[in-house]
Length: 216
Image 1 (cartoon, helix red, strand yellow):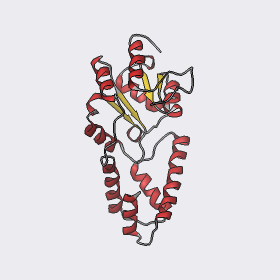
Image 2 (cartoon, one colour):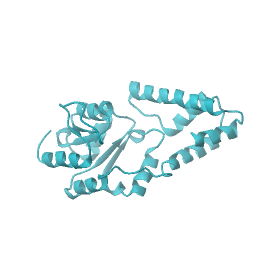
Image 3 (tube, helix red, strand yellow):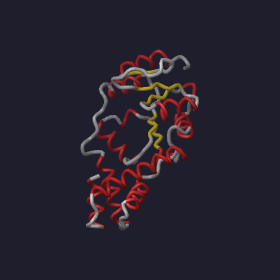
Image 4 (cartoon, helix red, strand yellow):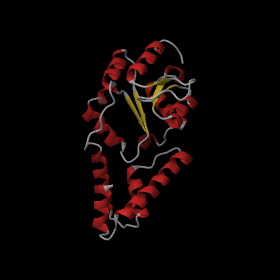
């Protein structure tokens, strides 16, 4: 919010934080309405334009481009912390010569920003393919983004397993596309006993290890 506040104040000095908070709330509602109804995620620049409109700020194209650059850089400072065990897990998967695709809905952080964060965190090299909603033009839970991932990986739905922390977008979306799905609930318990569920990467690895040669 501080990044947008500084940029909007340059364009409109009398804007206050309360106005910007309301603008973020309105834009966020619009974002999730679009995701729900159209199963796409608007590009970062589109979100920034909507945010400016909701704040009733007239901002130049060059200022918007600068704001986009600052939003993309924000993911690196501070750098997100990896979940415990994820590097070992990814290394184990790669050592089994299993193809790994990141299926990701983008938001305030674009695919370019997420790529940079993954590289800084030292895990980018573990992924063979990437299916970002801002590149594919489709977002989870749409089957299209999962079908895209299957296409680039050249595998059938019954050969793939999707791991995600959200039931509605990850588990339901993957299952509709014909994939097996694991609900990742870090530190928690499984909400649905009929659902494959894991609370850490050791449990995920145990599930995968038992299914490398079996269909879900």
